[in-house]
Image (cartoon, rainbow, N blue to C red; front, side, top):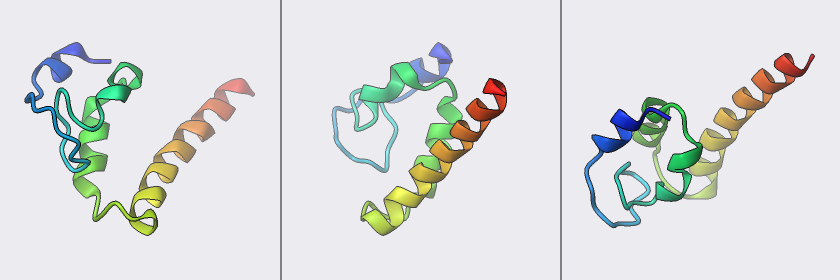
Length: 74
């Protein structure tokens, strides 16, 4: 993870899934994220948090990483 990007995030202990910030909704995953810009871009593209809007976005990102992992495993 790029620590300088994490350090530059604002701090606000909120659970707003539309904002990437220290103490916020995504705090639990910061240690697993290498590309903070990808997270911020994905969050910025969210149109809502209902399953029909939320799940496809994250599933698509996960599928891309899964595909990369499969290629590396071959």
